[in-house]
Structure formats: structure tokens, C-alpha cells
Image: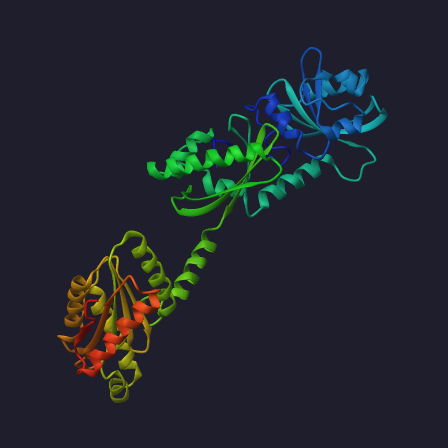
Length: 432
């Protein structure tokens, strides 16, 4: 996520080889590695820092901070030979090896050192016993390769939220080409171009980080829709976890998963023929609308719509024409509705409309508009000119209605009255 300009480094301890990193950064990263690593300062009196695995190999007590004389780690002769060999390495050179007989705290050891130089005065050495089966450098290379091959982004930061490590997947998401991002604060503007969204996400991040500090035993999740390096907007899950004074971030791209979930929700709530809400979605929204009306004391009305003589249309022209009639009725009616109205096909030729905030007079006016939009002009379908009319029933929510079903039943009663009175008409219940 936090990217600065950088060149690709060799597989051997990439972050440790970055000459711009401080010794403390290198030591903190090396402490996380499971193979023996020694950081050597090529001063007049060479000094060494050992990660926990190296301490176990040499028999030294682990110290998270501070260097020890190199002679105290490997013995005087081996110290002189190792320092001389390191000074002869080219700057940022990697891949050199030397085997030495060492006099370690734990006893004499024959060890192989695989060296990489960091700038002018420091070298990184991975170490293994000569009779060991696997090279430490090989082990480190495999670890690095595994991190790079992960399908999730992995990033490591210091206490000031400066990036110490990021893998290839992280680069794919957030290595912005137009702007280097050396610090966490710089990332927010690129990932959240809109100021309001950026402020909201940043506040959520602060809460998540605070929770992660209080409980470092587990990962803490935040999920945001962000702008990535290629300009695409993706939904990313961010897993935060503190490791001492460093913190680890894992990035999981869930864009496709969220898209599929949205499709499934739409499929579950949408009539496949007309694109309107289906019966299930209408019932859910009707229940919610009744609850909202009770809470706010705002009026609520329902319209029930039925296509007149639809069976005759199907029988005469076929089901393909009947389907097109249904779609045209849905389209014409939709054009006469308000943004907040809920329009659904309940099944067959029956439709329903929720009218939040509409009293009897407003609902009757909307019903008249829908009736005219559908019935005033014939439809032309597959070369057939068909006159289509609808019957409409309506009802307004009463204080005595127990639930949405009662309201819908009363609107349905109005629909039956419209059909009984000759069809092609609107019947709204009488005021209570």
C-alpha cells in the first residue's frame, strides 16, 4: 500500500539489502526470519548483531538492540577473516560465501557465511553449519519467494508507519506510478480521492489501529472501496496486526466476491422478466414501509394493478407477445412513478406499488397517471397492435391495520371492485 521508488532487489533478504534502511529497521526485520542472520558493522573494531536463530546457533543470549564485538561471536581469527572478506565485497554485492572455523560461545563450529553488502560499512550474513542440509540463503530465498507468490498483499511498517516490506500483490494494488508513497499518510489521498470518503475511512482506520494495539493477539479488519494503482476502484479488506512496535497489514481483494453477492441479492429480489422487484422483495419493503410510517406518522398507500383480459391476449397472440405486454406495462407505469415508490410484479399479470408519504388524494392522482400511461395508447408487439387496459385498486394505511398484509388486502379489495364494476378503472377505498 505504501510505495516509494525502488529497484527490484535479489531474493536474498530484500529489505535488509536496502542501503537506505537504518540498522534498526534491518534488525527488526531480521528478527522475524526463522534462519540465522548476522548483521556486521565493518567499523575499526567490527561488531555484530544476531537474530534469535543466529543466537541459538552460536550459543549467545538474544538482544533486540545493540551490537556485540564480532570477536565475541565467532572468535578472533574468524572475526579478522570475516571482516576482511566483507570489506573486499563490492557495494551492494551479494552471493559471496566463506567457510570459517569459529570459536562460538556454544563451542567450536565450522560455519558457512553467505554475505551481502549494505552500503559501505555493513554486511548481512546468513549462516549455516557446514554439515547442515539446507543453505540459510536458500531458506530465506524460499521465504521471500513464498511471500511474493501469495495471492494477498503483505506489508510491514515501522512505528512511524513507514514501509519496511511489501510483496508483489501489494505492488499490483497500490504501487502508484504517478506518485511515490513513502509514508502511510500520503496513501490516503491517492486511495480516497473524495475528501468525505477519505475522512470517514481515516476515522475508521484510527479506531481499527487503536483496537489492534489493545489486542495484538489477532487481526483486526477494515473493508473499503479504494482507488488502486491502475485507476480501478476495488473493494479491499485490510487486516491489521501489531508485532511489537511494527505492524503487519494483509490486503485481500474481495471485489469479485462483493460483485457476485450483489448479483445474488438482485436475483433474489428481482423479477427476471420485467426487472421490477418480485413478490418477496415487495413484502419485505412493505413491512419496512409500514414500520417507518408508524414511526414518523407519515401517510402510506398501496396500489394493486391487474392487466385486463390478459389470458385472452396470451391465448390469441401467444406467450411471447404476452411477455412483451408485461414488460411494456412495467415500463410505462415506471415512468409515472416517483423515485421513492416501490414497484413490483407479484406474479402473472398482477403488479403492486408502495407509495411512501402519499395520502388518499396523492395516491389517487398517481393511480390515474399510471392508468392513463398504460391504457391510453395501444401497444405494438411483433407486428400486432394491441389495446391494453388495467384495473387499479388502492388503499391507505389506517391506524387499525395490524401489518402490511392488512393494507395490501384492502388494496386488493379495491382491485376486485374495479374488475367487478367493468374493469379499466380505478377503485380506491372510501375514507375511514
